[in-house]
Length: 268
Image (cartoon, rainbow, N blue to C red; front, top):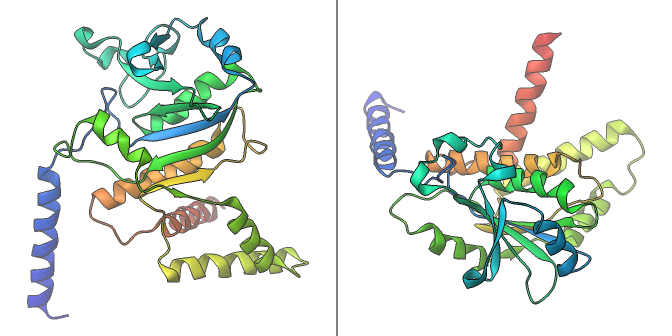
């Protein structure tokens, strides 16, 4: 590329970056980027869960919304997000950091405005509701929003628009097909690398509104698998907000793994 074309390309990138920077990022009252998430739970029964929720001072019923509010108050006040309890203006307290509903179809949902709140909510309610209440699926909007794109309560409705539901059977079928006949660790690593490379080359990426299964039998008490899955989607949203829309979720995972391997190599 000539020096003139390079200068033009640099100017175009700078203009795009400045334009993006001029649009303020929509954020929550606890200072995380607004990014809707909903967790779906299997439960023994609604009365079983309500009996436990009613013991919590930070959970109150909101009849007009037909839900229960999880407040940044009482038992939940010590949770640290990007901003803490003291960062919320006194006149705004207590703020709602999550909503619990019991759909007519059964089960329970926990809906919130950010990745951090979703993870902390899972960690907060997990031990309090007990092992009978199990997070089965996660739905997430895979993007950030500018402050002028709409009100948070309206943007939350995106969780029910043009949803792509990931069928775990498709992934299981592909896994069995790729690993059929694999007998050694070396072969397994080779097949896994080839599979990732195919996904990279295809440009396959997550949909805008993604509903994917969780693996409760593999989850840790700290919901580390959920946290990792959502954190990768958060990183992707950051990159796309900054203009790096060519980066797919697979590319970001590969980059993270390679960086981790490089860091370990330097330690040795």
